[in-house]
Length: 223
Image 1 (cartoon, rainbow, N blue to C red):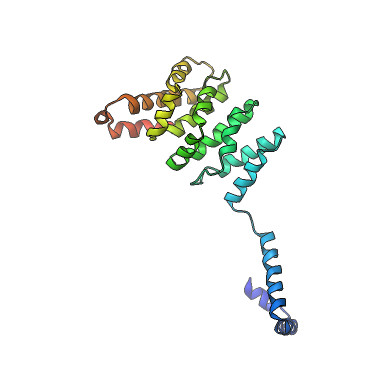
Image 2 (cartoon, one colour):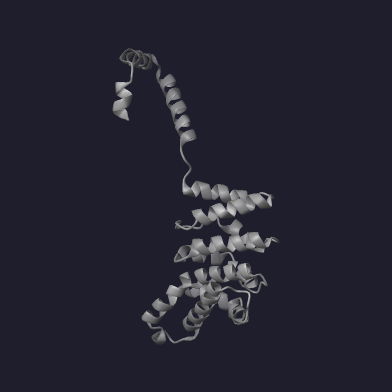
């Protein structure tokens, strides 16, 4: 690209431009540099962090369509991040009157917190488990399934998260969902594994928590 630019440049015009720059004062040079910098900023693609902030800001939009679009964008953006700062608006959407908004918000939080203790603790600190447990009782299969998915992401290998889940009477919700015929096969498989791992982590003696068993059991969390 550089060779092409040099080969297709007019030497006389280049010398003319260079001479003009030499004549510029320090103040004029600084102004020119600022103009170039502003131009580069306009053409610079936003980072994932900036896109996440934009999408989260869109959640404050009163339009249901805009909120759904923002949530779909967040599903793609949050998976690789290491820090969930700013996800409080998503947690608040768990109480939205629209089932689709609640369900997708739970899905985003579940993806963001998978295998990430920092994010798990941040989300748990905002009281998300209370709302998720309530969603777990939903008569809607998709909503209950996404609530279970997110709960499993938040308490997996997280002792504090498991304690919070117990304090929210989450175990009772798991027992109710056992007889829920509206959950699909994947959701029921996740429910069984969430239930088994939670019970084992909470009630078994430390010496009975065989690492191999827990490792095999945890594989099912990604069903």
